[in-house]
Amino acid sequence: MLSVIRVHLPSEIPIVGCELTPYVLLRRPDKTPTTDDVPESAPLEGHFLKYRWYRVQSDKKVAICSVHPSEPATLQCLGCLKSKVPVAKSYHCSTKCFSDAWQHHRVLHERAASAATEGNDEEELLRLNSSGSGSGVLSTSGSLTNGSSSVYPAAITQKTGAGGETLVEVGRSKTYTPMADDIGHVLKFECVVVNAETKQNVGLSCTILTSRVIPAPSPSPRRLIPVSGADVIGHLDSNGRPLSMGSFTVLSYNILSDTYASSDIYSYCPTWALTWTYRRQNLLREIVKYGADIVCLQEVQNDHFEEFFSPELDKHGYQGLFKRKTNEVFVGNTNTIDGCATFFRRDRFSHVKKYEVEFNKAAQSLTEAIIPVSQKKTALNRLVKDNVALIVVLEAKFGSQAADNPGKRQLLCVANTHVNVPHELKDVKLWQVHTLLKGLEKIAASADIPMLVCGDFNTVPASAPHTLLAMGKVDPLHPDLMVDPLGILRPHTKLTHQLPLVSAYSSFARMGGSVIAEQQRRRMDPASNEPLFTNCTRDFIGTLDYIFYTADTLAVESLLELLDEESLRKDTALPSPEWSSDHIALLAEFRCMPRARR
Image 1 (spheres, rainbow, N blue to C red):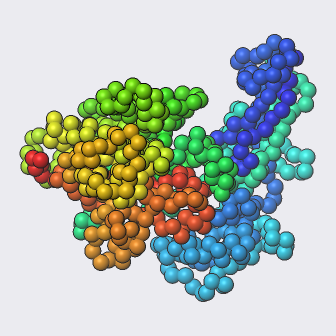
Image 2 (tube, helix red, strand yellow; image 1 turned 90 degrees about the vertical axis):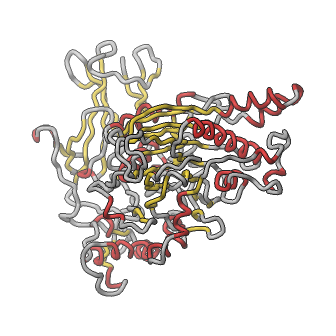
């Protein structure tokens, strides 16, 4: 007979909006184990599995710490209540928690729309029903959305638990997605074998209890900062997107593939915040909130593009294109290989053409041309890294006020790449960037077209690849050129390109003297005019991501504000519960310029 051997949940903390999928191990009638579902519609030898989810409710409701969401709150900041800051942000689990977070917490007060904070820091603390044990519990509060509404009739939704609590039925399928009403409550999952004919339970039910449901932390809002002298409010619509005819926004973001998001590498990040079920929702919220016209993502797994990002962003008006990395080096399930995904708003652009660059193929051609037969295997082992680039040509559906020929099609070429090469292989990294630029030059020669080059180049400012991108050439004496065992970089005079590329974020260095401008300049490296960092982990902080544009056809209007290291270090580093990648997103607003023949 069918029986349940074991049930457990892969994540110890349930989060609002993140689907819970229990692991249910069964024993078939032939004694073999299986994890396959046995629904009522397809019983196995007259038996099927019945599932129930319950919210465990008691008279007391628990508020959650805004900094440590797995901990119950014992303190509330009265300043937040006075300033009309969202109530959920006002709770803290201890005085130390509040004190440590104060430098970041006070920003909430400063940004609040209402009146100024009153009193000093100590007066802004209210201890909530604390018994001195450090685990104070909130009594009923109207600010907690822990209602008992349900889609099921009242007659079958409630029963009494073993401890006298009320069990409110909230789900009847194997999976369940916690809602706002569940915050602060424990969930109970119940699984039992049922006789298909009599509809009676067979044997005992298997149950598990979760931790208390916590709200999903959301990334702090990042402002779009005008850099052209124009008032940014004047050309954003009600959804925060550019309203002026000739401008558009581009986002570039390495989202951190689930394959790489391991607790071994990011041990400082809570395990629940590393799960893909949590990170995908947080990343989607962040990406959609930016509302960019063009979205370039790196480290997107093949299955995640097909099953998540493409259908979800389609709901928000985006069409997506994807280029999976090649798999000559990769070992494992090819469905989880990551790659580059480029999305664009269907109401703003239409797809004209797509080019795919596979650096492995370029490596094969290079070794055939210049490497002796005896060294080809060694050369390919060094050069083949499975990296790709996705180049998309789009046609704008909006007019360009700056265009010198209004009747001509407004095309745009967008390159999206991830140069994932080990740091010590400086020659391979530079060769891949040079190969991409030569391909873009061919496109530029065939059509007078503005260009954007976005991605994670895994190269810091002033390195040879960055210098080639930004300056169009590399000094023959650059130290990176010393690493070239295969001779693929010689002669050094060939390391050039004719595209007038400029890094979008260098515009922050040329801003005026406003307070906002000064704040952003402090987050820039004055030596390179690049951000101080776009990647921030416990062991590394630096800039690896860029948005380059052709300065003769495009002008930067606005840039997404940079984050400061101090605000990220409150969670040690990235990723964190707030930010779900180890990289930060870059976003620039551009305006089309009058065409000038190069």
